[in-house]
Length: 609
Image (cartoon, rainbow, N blue to C red; front, side, top):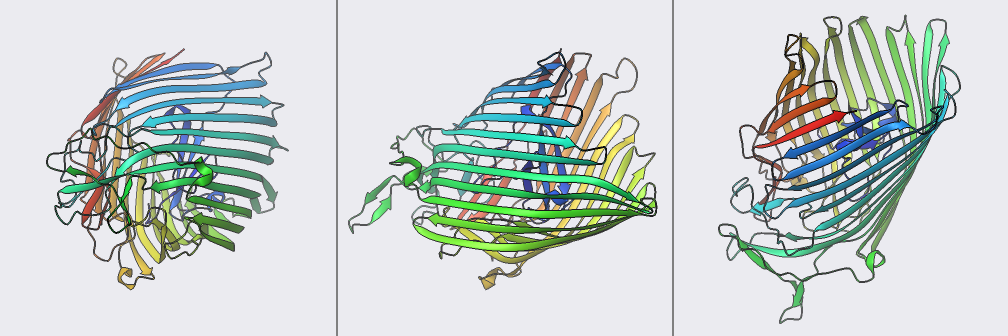
């Protein structure tokens, strides 16, 4: 989004690991997802200036509520989930929420599958109406054959069957165990002032093997030279935050104040991208052992040797850490009966990183102040305009192939916009124009996944339009369009200056419509339909000679029915059964991409006691 990779939060906490992830939150634990374009909330300006999405997990409500959901779908998808919300004492002070889920699924990709288990208990003790303590734990366990169904060929994007794979079923599946915990203390001093203190942890362990092809085979381009790779990784994140917010009313001015401190410690230990299946050639050099696969007539069931890192994580090739703390304050002042709003804020962040990759060590220290100024004015009760200047920061770890430490990503966002409510607020529109500068963007080195590439400076400018709400009686719509123009302004490689930024998309246009049928007999039925479109897509990596990916258009639809205790929904994805790809790039004579699912369907039944 907006020429960058948006930041991820869970319950307002930065739990993004250094290497990969975080593991996606399963729908069973999600209460809602907040999407913020640009630095909409000051708490989120440790992140990319493009924006943030924040996943809020299910919490106890104090009102007993019990439900179960069953889902069936294409490729033998079976899923069961339960959500229990209740109290454990007569005074309703001790409250709980328990979500459990189990799922098994095959895939449209040959030999791929997914097994998943989720367990998420939450306990909350309500000392009084003003004070509470909440303890939350989430355990997610995964087993899948392919860490990513990436395919490659010399013959162009989407030129292989959608079920094509370079995987071998003899390889052991990926095993992932993800633990996340939160401890939150909340206290309201009065109706205007409150304090929140939160500590969280994440530990993600995974191990697995996969096949990889690093370049074209000169002797026979259609014969892929596969070599097995091995990953053993432990990622940990510890985060703590304390903040106060409150309101001060003075004659003619109201102040909304937010201030606090964030602390975060990230570490990754691993043996990553290991080429373990090798032999010694006649010259005494170690060479990877290849398992050829012809893309026109693939033959599988080849036995590959097993492998585990001797001594485990302590003998791996990667040990990286990021430690940062931030002090911040924000003051939103409102004037003229809250028609004019002025936002002033600042954040001081200190970052320390340490990297040990293949016995090459680097360290870095940075101290950065990032200010914010925002102005909003209500021309009418239903019409407002705004302007914003904001600087952001993302602490980053990593090392280049030249042995240099990766610096933090820094961004500057300038934005103006207008918001309008229509028909008594039943639907609203937002139009925004932005100009973003970034420096120190990081990408994986395509020649060696252990190392990183650091782009010098980039810019992104664009326009966004959103329409949300009930545009006609019974018809709800979410319609948006985004235009983006982002390029590299400076780089150590002069050939990249002026090139498109990684993962560039020029046009994005999405629409989703949901219609509740009129009439007392039909009011329990609904029909929905929508599409996703991306035009002018660039590559995963910045390149001097572009190999742009094909445009993306996917049409989805569904029907639903509900009564007092039961909801039934059928969703059909990729109705037109188009051949779609994601994450395209070209390297060393090969086109790489991730195939997307063909026509598929899901039936879900949700029962509430």
